[in-house]
Image 1 (tube, rainbow, N blue to C red):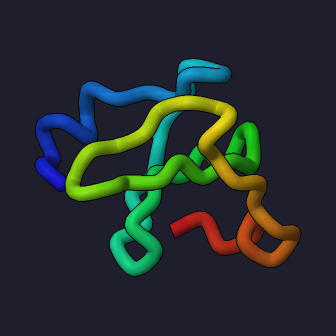
Image 2 (cartoon, one colour):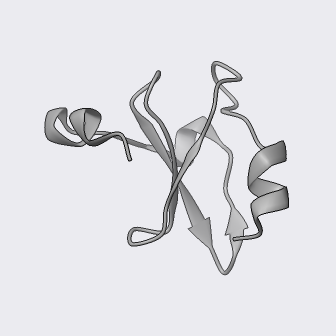
Length: 62
């Protein structure tokens, strides 16, 4: 994912910072404990498409 694009994106729920998880191909919002998928290089920024982080993932904060 392009760093410039990542810098422009914000969580659609809280407008907070997103962290890129390259391994899982997701953008993670730790404030809302949500992970938004990246499909074919395109971030899917819909809350209904996001998955909820597990308790261990919430502590990872890369």
